[in-house]
Image 1 (tube, rainbow, N blue to C red):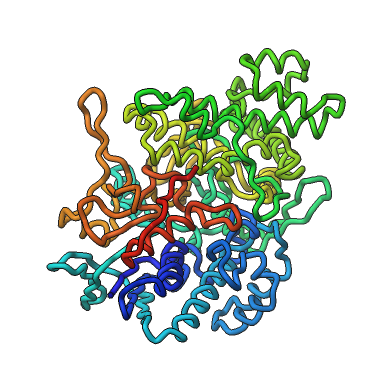
Image 2: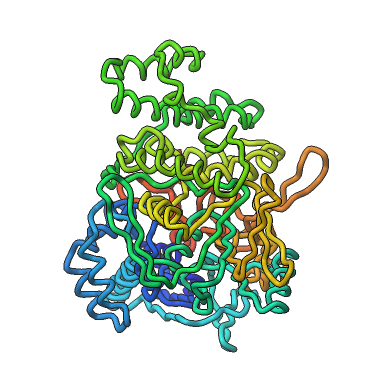
Length: 617
């Protein structure tokens, strides 16, 4: 049997691992695996050769590529703190070897490690699989690294992967492409054309480590659109990477010492607030907080005619977050309150607001969703300088909360529930419990945006750095509803709320990666399969007769096999929209659904039975 894997990022490596682990049970005598990637093992995002100051946003002890129970398994934190990591990195022929070795000395279980270290872990993991294959004469692995796949087609009963003018026929094929290029939007085309005409720098959405920032000088003004993870990466590259450094003041704040090479940075977004920071992790690797409200029992109870109302879904999720918030608040600040009694009442009472009112918390202690989702709600925005004061006040507050830790800080600890409850959310999506209308109009839009804002930010150190850079006047945050145009031989930006205060810039950076979208992908794997009508976006029929495309490839959720295409599988970012948070690396010790999916895909490809398809809860 010949199997092709396109993409050697974490999901490609997970698939490879499970093919190897399950092959002993297969009936085929021999297995040949072709593994393709335009980079190396680990993929482009996790490349070893990238700036050491670009860090992950999940703790090292909560990341692993090994199956639970697999022999000689190491999480990233275990590997990084062992001699295995030192020996492996010393064997690499990379010019940042010393930086990698120095970084290892700073890693603990709860560290947010450099992405380059994760890349080294991925490559080490791959070598373990290669060594395992060497001892099996019936398995042959052929790697095609640093190789672009130009086309995928089907000839008779074979899938054919074309790479650098060579065709590779395989019996079965799985692709997981990770971050991809998309076709340019009209706005991007217009800005790109304007940049060329006026000799400006325009950086399209991409991984921040791959952007060429060398032409940006200290006397230029840089406009950054977007304030998520990529925003922090670009700011780091334009400051620390240029010789500036931070010192710790010992009170949860930092001081930035400029090198003089930093440009002035104006950052903004639709919301006008940087993403919430990740708290300092206090969790053990297998520590997860279970739902009290968004449980399978409650979901099933509220499901009528095979559908769960979005309002009920959101209410259950929000109650879990509020339950966690008040539990942490009481433990941290109110020892006079019987915590167990409060939790019992909260989990059973009909009127939560009345219960909270009966405890007479201070106004600022009452969990308010409007304020959580819009920390500058009610703030009168008059000038850019005035807005900086509001943002700095909020940053101070949320940094202090996050520095308490993920099991202590009430706000950031409660928002951690959005990560713990991912499988509960996936259960609702994968079973199509929301109506198509509510899925498109409520979940895909504002809800997904809110989840990213609340739970997919960078570690708190990044918020501390932003605050320090703001105090130095190097970074300024625009108010909500950022607008950007090209005019007067510059990029021009302002907030909708004070549109007379216009900032001219020499550089515009789109600080984000492209959203995975089957219809708009420019990846040749996707485009060639689309051109041949082999794959399609998942079509969603709305009640008014309209049809909209889900970003995901249309697949059978029980097998991750492309609909109507035997022996063609896809998972990961290509299924974002059908699943939820498909870019995550699996977590050990919690029966992670990503590990289960890898096992199921591998067994299906090897014609082995799957005892129970992934159901998430």
